[in-house]
Amino acid sequence: MSNILRQQIERIVSLTDEEYAFVLSHFTSKKFKKHQIIIREGEYVHNDYFLLSGLMKSSHINPEGREHIIQFAMQDWWITDPQAYHNETKATLQVDCLEDSETLFITLENREKLCREMQKMEYFFRKKTTAGYIALQRRILCLISSTAKERYENLLTQYPGLFQRVPKSLIASYLGVTRETLSRLANNN
Image (cartoon, rainbow, N blue to C red):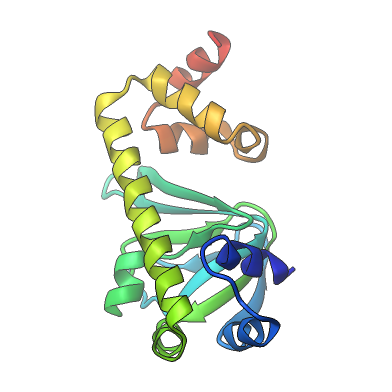
């Protein structure tokens, strides 16, 4: 399973077997059960998780108790509360498992150490962070400038399998619509 991480890294930089073994030595493997919360709002965040299998979500609960889905993460994706992880502060997001999940995680200390000791990995993480910023910008622009129908169709095109794996209420939260609106969009498609 850890070859999934190697494949992702090697889309950006090539590694010898020895280099990959060194990279992997900075990660820890951990399995989580469906519904398990791995990051709680208000707690310190120590890890960035790479999914080998399963499905997770990050979300924020507003003062009225409404959940706003920030991200879904599936195999070959990273998930954490980036602000809390990088600033070593308390989480403003919650991350929990929608399916049993297997991960490799890296602490900030190990990530910094790895980047200091291996230029290739510093480059890899910089490229992944930049790609994450770009994806976040696209998501924000989509939320503020697209119709609900356009957001729905975009998600359906990008991640068609997600609709079979995630409850409609969570898809609606991610799209910023009500469950009823999502049902209308699905029925008109």
